[in-house]
Image 1 (tube, rainbow, N blue to C red):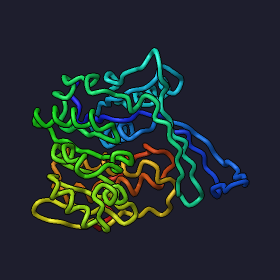
Image 2 (image 1 turned 135 degrees about the vertical axis):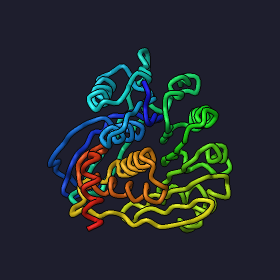
Image 3 (image 1 turned 180 degrees about the horizontal axis):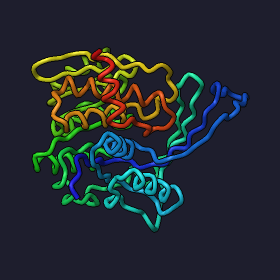
Length: 306
C-alpha cells in the first residue's frame, strides 16, 4: 500500500478532562466533560494527513490491552494503515496521556509512555518505507529515530523530525546525527532553546542550521512559526480562531498541514502558511487530532485572500 506519509513514533491513548480551573494542592476542581481517543504524535499526524486528503501509515508499538485495541480502532476508522503497528502481547501496556484542559484552552498533561517508547530499530519494517513519499519521525527514542531516518534518506525520501520534549533535553552534539539526517526539523520554541542552549528562537534556528540541518521550522504556537533555510529566514504569523478550546496536538496538526502542503507542491514558506491555518483551526476544537478537512482549510485560505 502506497502512503503519502509514514509516521513513526508514539501511539497512545488520550484521556481528556475539561475543567473550569486547574486544581491546586488540597483543592478539588470539578470535571465538566471527559472523553478519550487515540493520541501520540505519530497517530495524530497520520490522522491529520488523512483528514487533509492524503494517505498515511503509522509505525508504532502498543500493548495487548483495552487502550491498545481502542487506539487501533480509532486509527482504522480514520483510514490510517495500521499494518505496521506492533502489538506487545506478552508484556507491557499501551501508553496513555491524561490531559486536563481549563476554560481558557490551557492544558496540563501527565504521561505514561508504556511500550510506545520501546520500539527498537530492528522492529521497523524497512520495506514499508519504500512505499512512501515522506517519513515523519516524532518523539521517538534516539536510536530508532536515527535508524529510520538513515534508511529513509538512503531511499531518497523526505525526512521530517519532531524531537519532542524528551529528546530536546539532550545536547545538540548527541542529536547531531539526527539533525544531519533530517530534511526538516520541527521543534517548538521551548524545545529549540533547550536543544541548542540559545537564549532566543532565532539563535536556536541558526544553531541547528550550523549543526547540519537543511531546513528548520520552529513552532511558536500563537506567535506563528519561524522558518530557516540555507538561503533565507522568515517569520510566518499564526492564524487565530475566534476561541481557543484545546491546544493539545496543535504542533502535530501543524506538521500534518505542512506535509500535506508539500505533497501538493507548495514552496516551503507557503506550506508553513497552510500549516498555521490547520493548527489554528485545530485549537478551536476539543481533542488532540481534531484536525480540519482539506475543504475547511481551503475555505479559510479563500477568505483570507478576499
